Structure formats: structure tokens, C-alpha cells
Length: 259
Image 1: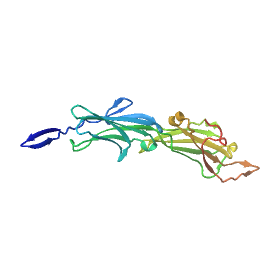
Image 2: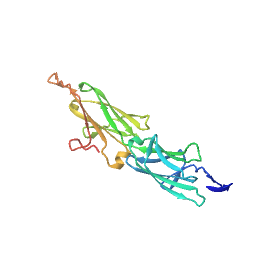
Image 3: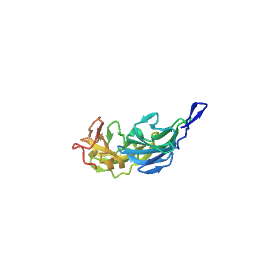
Image 4: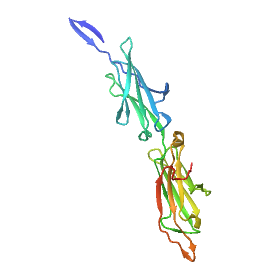
């Protein structure tokens, strides 16, 4: 601000200076505007720092995720010429809701009409959110082939499916399809065709779903079981059982060790 005296009047001239375009740093390394930071595992803490300088008056710095303003802390340093440098830090624990999130730093003062914005996109890895198994809806006959399908959703990276007959890994190689979901996660569909015999009557098939996120965090994989009823000849008669049971469980003492 400059002060001049003209004809006894004091005229105050306020000089506005636009701030610099904000720069975003992670762990002391500058991130290019619009770049991807990560990957991070769900539950990790993300620290970002936004810096702008040269603004007069002191710029306001704020952080946003979509329309949500994030809590942050700012430090202001005023230079000899009256301009200010502002450093703002945001700290957030990453959750599934942050998949593909854009974290924006906004800088504004009276010298500009619209806020200056820089942003980064979060590359978040998450464990699978659900697992479902499907099989025959009615009893099958010994000697038949049955189709079993395991669908694992919400994983990034894509989950792997492993099939078990009781506690033994199936020797049959499943067919696997991986689909990209709108939220950036992946759906794994694993299908296996297996022959059944009288020894499979009331046998339990398991599908286990896991990915690197669950493994790195030491968390149990998702697990579901399917009990198959098999009709077979005994004394020229069929044993007739008409019940299919779908049961959800994580690993416990009641479930075979399928790690």
C-alpha cells in the first residue's frame, strides 16, 4: 500500500498482486498438476502440501474433494514487499470412498477473478467387497458335471479366486474373466466345471477370494461355501436329497484351513 498526499487529501493506493499457481507436493516431491499419486492401500494416511507465493493480499488456500472442503492447516510467510507465501497441509485417512478421488488445492485473493486450482488423483487399492457362489439349485446325479461360479466384486487390483473341494484345492482349471467396474475396481468371475460322484454327496465346495491388499494387511480372504446333494443308486433306489445350502463365512475354527 502506498500513501500520497494531494491537496491535503490522503490517498491510499492498494496494490493487488495475483498469487502463483499452486503446486502440490507429496513427501517433499512435487506432483505434476493432474497427475496420479500412489498407489496406496485402503487405510493409509495421505499427506499433501500445497504452496503458493507472491500473493498480495495474503491468499486464501483451501482443499477440496469434490464439493467437500477438507480440514487443513496453513502457514503464512510475509515477504519484505508485503507479498505472502502460503503453505497448506492436508492429512486424510484413505477409505473406499476415495477411489479415484481428485484432491484439489484452491488459491484465491482479491487480485484474481477465479480461484487458481491444482489437483492430483488418488490411486487407491482396496480389498474385495463381496463374494458370491452359485451352483446347481437342485440335487444332481452321480456322474453329472456341475457348473460352479464364484463372483468377487470391488477389488483393486483384481482378486484371485481359488476353489476347494472340502479342504483340497480343485485340480480342474477354472475359466476366469475380469471386468472393470465404473468405480475403478475389478470384478472377477471364476467358473469351474467338475464331475460329481457318490463321494461328493453332502460335500462342500469353497471359493476363496483375496488380493494383495488383504494379504499385505494380514486380513482373512473372503470365503463362501456351497453344499451339493448328489443322487446315486443304492439298493436299486435313489437317495433323494433336495437341499442346497449357501453359507457365508470368514475363516474360523469351523471351516477347514484353506490358506
